[in-house]
Image (tube, rainbow, N blue to C red; front, side, top):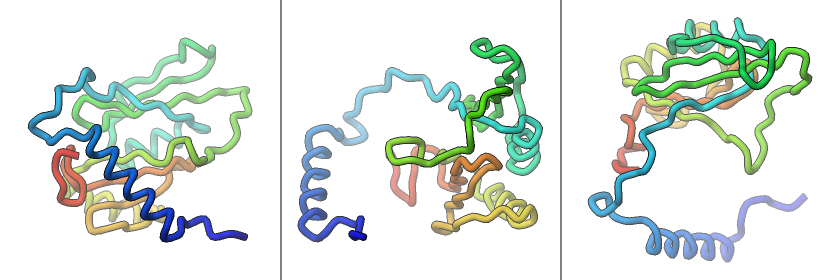
Length: 170
């Protein structure tokens, strides 16, 4: 089996390409135009068990359930939403009768969803994950990666919105 990591020559080429892209497209914070978007309305995932998903997101992670109604695109399916702060929602569908299979993380697909929480709440939620036996990876003193009941990878990040690991205006 070959090593999937790039070799030194590839790393230099990748770094040069990153520098070129930054030079061509990344304007300094004060020179960037305003976004045409107002924010993330919602991000939708698939749930294999509506109640299990509600308990995980509302009771464990403390994201209030804000709505639950029939999916307009698939009769009998639920579409439900959780408040993840700042007017943003995390949404789910279930598809009873369809064998959608388990969540799969694939290259080119969803990697993870990073959600900013206040540092004190981050500590409390980390403790709740411990108490619930949820395995996680502590990436730094501000970032926890873990999976929801269906396998979707989440990150709780104690950095404020618009900041990552001390860098602002990301």
